[in-house]
Image (cartoon, rainbow, N blue to C red; front, side):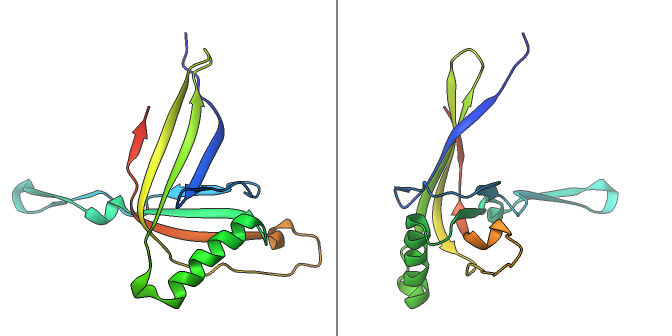
Length: 151
């Protein structure tokens, strides 16, 4: 029998608060922008391999409904960071993707995020042609690490 992967009921939490006011499309997007390793080949084909610690960094973009409870929660965390950067309490989080196998078994694909800070201020716009993006707030958070666990 071929393998299948059924996705749904994903969960994102920041500082132990489950976010529920998510917008449309890619409402949560985790990326790892840096390579975890490098290799350089020199004379006679000699190669040097190195581990890149910054490859553990995870960038998270969260799209929430503008002025929702989650928008207010995240904006409050951002305001605290901006008011006293040196005193910022680093954010934690979890992204849990539920994956079914088609036989009723469900696995959790979990990213455990630590050491997070906001890296951008959310943008805004007005659109007179009914574009829905004007009612979405996008937060960008970078975590120093986000190991993946499959259970």
